[in-house]
Length: 320
Image 1 (cartoon, one colour):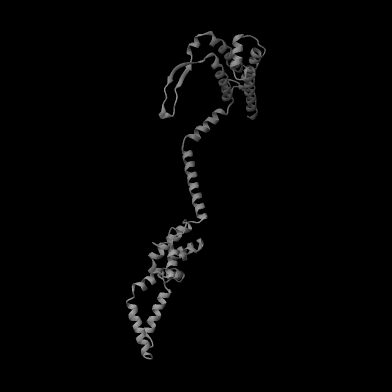
Image 2 (spheres, one colour; image 1 turned 60 degrees about the vertical axis):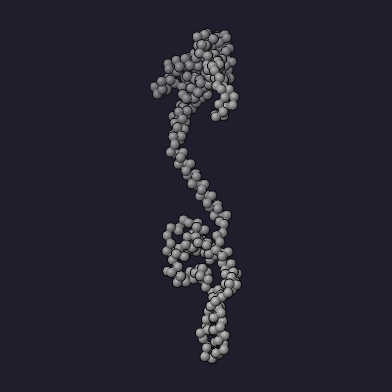
């Protein structure tokens, strides 16, 4: 097909929709204007025999058939002169007959002139498909973006990521999880001093994985578990932050049996033990100094952790 005619291109979207409904097209409601023009062009050309009598489509079929061009008017006027008025003017009839005979065998130059008429060149230019307008491009980009967003949303909703995130949030949204997190931070800081890392081996460069240099592998020195340098500081910290708070919160349980360990009493006992053993330098000597220098924030950090746990426990109890 040579393209969409200018008569269809100059129609508005609403007019094209009405025209499609009138000629009996199907599945045209969701088409863009340019796609609807192409679909109408194909439908009108395929059903020309049935639709060319429609007055609404007369301009369209007049354009594609070339009706009303100067060449055809000249041919029709010549035929009228050749068939009418012969009895009144024989000379004119002979001249007309001669012109008709000459026109029966046109020369190559006349045929070339007919092919290259300005009207035909203009009609060919109008039939060339035009690039889509900015509005059409914006609609297509918006449709692609919407489709991509829907695909990503479907993939995320079908994956286990949302369920895992929800489960993690529910697990961390409790007083026990907060107190365990504080204990983990303190224990990790203490580990760097009482259980240092020791060199094990070296991994050579692996260009395929993007590792250009050698990588040293270190693991905790497990032989330190057999020395007092580990058990002294660790026992002091465990007694202050874990053992005494657990015993106190089990014996003094203000939750009325709802929980085995009262988190508010746990934080309170931990704060008191930390203040007595570390802030007032009660006893421990070198082990106490090592714990203070290893735990993030020292004595103040342990007191702050106990205070945060107690505050959250108190707020949870008020929110019930």
